[in-house]
Length: 249
Image (cartoon, rainbow, N blue to C red; front, top):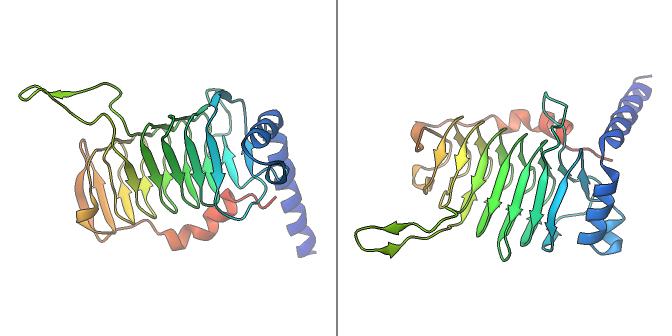
């Protein structure tokens, strides 16, 4: 009897997921990005409405292919409704090293010759924004809260007014393994974080923080070290996260 209940729950979850998938966008994207042998497995799912600004770039999956392993607009948070704001502009390259989840109403832009690297179980919650003109790396288990932005460019040329020297417009961003970025945070060009770093809500990151070592809490505008020897309980949450985030379709 217990086995029947488990099977029923799995089927109910699968049916619920299939009802929320944007099948037109899903098939279109997979057929455009991958050879048919991969596309027919539908590794990338789109949920809710999405506008494809540009799909001239490349999308690579460097992991065993599974159906629905990468979700754009995936409703894994408390809120369930989409505002219909999602946009994807892919002129450069996105590389996924495993399962990846983006919440609702995302904006992702990857410029020509730029590369966005997403580690296994990397994800970004509702109303997240990524603008990649150089290189942005989400390492394994980088989880970014809602309404955050990851931007590796200043957009406009800045100069040192004393020397008239032009400053770099863009610099790579690297978020270390098992990082959590709190809500309303901005991660800007040149940011580099260590493994097991927690970024407090409403924080501005704009430099290399790896000298502080692992297991740290940073926060503020701009971010500074707030506490050492602290980490999200990743092992304690792993089963719950994978149960709620991984679809197993």
